[in-house]
Length: 82
Length: 418
Image 1 (cartoon, each protein chain N blue to C red):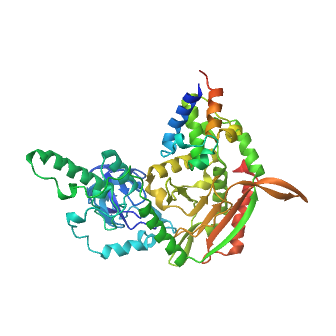
Image 2: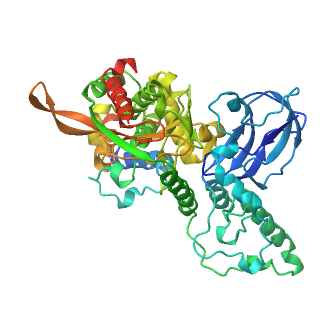
């Protein structure tokens, strides 16, 4: 999965959780929880939605790095097949 | 034959709009069946029937708005005369719908609104509408600014949106006959952006209830910082074994601990009506859910103290999702015996709540954060949460309140038992 595909997956997964979230205006280093006002249930739903779409189950120990757009995209690009 | 009445879905509800019947006259119904959906200013709520019986007659048509307590159907029940709240009334706990919602009396005496002239149809500023009405309007492409609310509080219900859609459809079908469209059809304002859920209507409901709470309930407050390193270490180990869909959040541990404390300190769990307190034998934990774009709703996790942690987590996720999607059940809206507000990981250090009448306590959890912590004469760093209690001085005092917080702290030191 290339970074563009990873970002598309993230955008799609976010749509149900935070319909107003706009990745285009997001600082890639910013904590998405702050930027999109995601609580812990939202963030878990996001991780779940990504697992459903890609098969990548992000361990809790990696949460710290995937909170930013860049961290999430890098993580997915590195872990997902294809 | 028994009257099935418009239930009070929380102390801030005085009337409701019947959206849809899920039964017909002649249908047999069983305890727990959802027989109707009702729209309030906060959410569309599915109404369950609390006893077995047969539907005899539906008294209110979809779209109609009636005061809490108004009979909306007749259900035969083999000679018993009870309404929708009746099973509750068997327990000493239960306040009557009126007691739960004193405000319900007021609107009954006001006359129905006079038919407004069409010229007044267009509201100034953002119209008030229920979340479901907004969603329906968005689906149908209806501008809420042209929708006339049927209910007296001026909040647009989904029935109003449907009526407007029918109006437009009728206007469109007659357009070929050169009849000008209805006066309301003429746009007099800028079309708005995509509709959002109406924060103003909800804010109004919250404000009036919280003002009543502060007026009537003598609050006292206490707080305790709780070390969570055992709880979080246990949870981390637990979650590393679980697939994503079964992971448990710290919030579930906190809720479970609060539910346990409510069971062990009954003075914070129950209802105070007309100055008289009745403890509840069951713990229905109201969970304050903040909605995107503002506003708050506190549906109940029923029997939270008895739920295994994994089950509680599943129910909590479901409840939060449905609260945000505007799809809750009546029992979840009216049965909470004590409320928890959890600021979560984006929150601040502590929160002191306002009690949701007729409940007598609200437990607050701040954000879990690393803090300096003294252990055996040494300073270390621990994940810490500040737990607060706001409780009703008519029922308990700081000493008892402190015991409730101590019970929460103790429960969180033995997470494997939660």
